[in-house]
Length: 154
Image 1 (cartoon, rainbow, N blue to C red):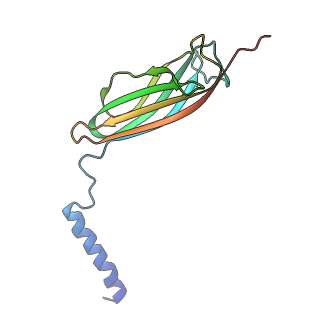
Image 2 (cartoon, one colour):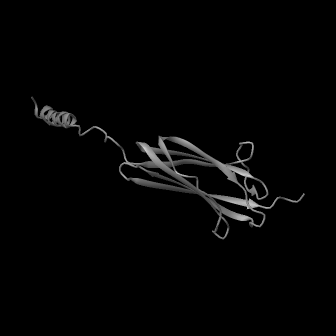
């Protein structure tokens, strides 16, 4: 056996020995994880809303997110719409649910009150995932800017 062949034989033998011990196998349960894939603002008919948004109209939001980890996870979600003064004007916090790992879609309605000012609003969406067996917890947050205007008077 040449010296070059011996150098290749040792790592191959070591890899085979470690594989036999299960060192290369994935863990039995992965850590809890979350990822927000997209946030969309839609008109009532489900098409993407034109920007800037008309403060008199009702819009819908659609958030796609993925959770991963154990077989069953405790998932909590929260939407906060912050006004131009960075104070909450809308809070949506559905009850937490136990869900298997996978991709999900959350939907809801956005509407400003009559006395809410025009300007730049911030939509914050958070997903919190907790593995009930290990206690591992992950929180993901995304923020989208939305400009609301008064309708044009024509």
